[in-house]
Image (cartoon, rainbow, N blue to C red; front, top):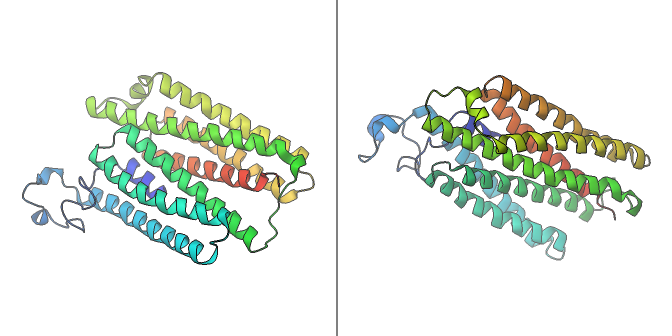
Length: 287
């Protein structure tokens, strides 16, 4: 996901204009002379092509690893539905995600497709986290787990997780619509482009504040209710600190004209926030 964010920040989303090949080759060209006859040399950028190709290689690597997870789950944990079916879901999802990545390229980074691509990646990450927790349980490891009396922290976590997913979706739409504005109006100042987004940007900011408040509420409630589960109390601090850095990064993006480095850090931070909340929801689920 970090590599995908780097591709986006570097403007390399169409570094390879076709899929699954790159300029009709299984390896990107290293010279203009290697371009197919129907390709305009003006569309070829060596750096951007290899950045996008690295993203594809990372995706293929993840795909094979997930296939390994699915095979192992089928071989060893076939009688454990809490492991088997999420593993099967991961295999199906990563295959769909690979195909959908091709659609993102085919539709030339349509913001709606980019947004779905990001959300699917988050869902895949959450499923893999579920498999980690279920794997520990299957091996009899003593993960810190609450009882039914700790249901309030879990409910707050699930609510925060849903709001965070919505906020991430809105952030992807903001970024995609900005790109459309820049294509339609080359040279448009970034701050002016932000001002033209209207309701989507305002809603994105509002959900960011709400997410921060909910993470703070989770921390406060966990501190009170989980006094007998110190490991869970410590973990409940993680989302609030990530949320604080996310708000700071968002303010930096808005005030500094969307620098690519902050774009990348903002995406990584959003992914980490979602993952930390997903893990908290799994660990806080009442037994």
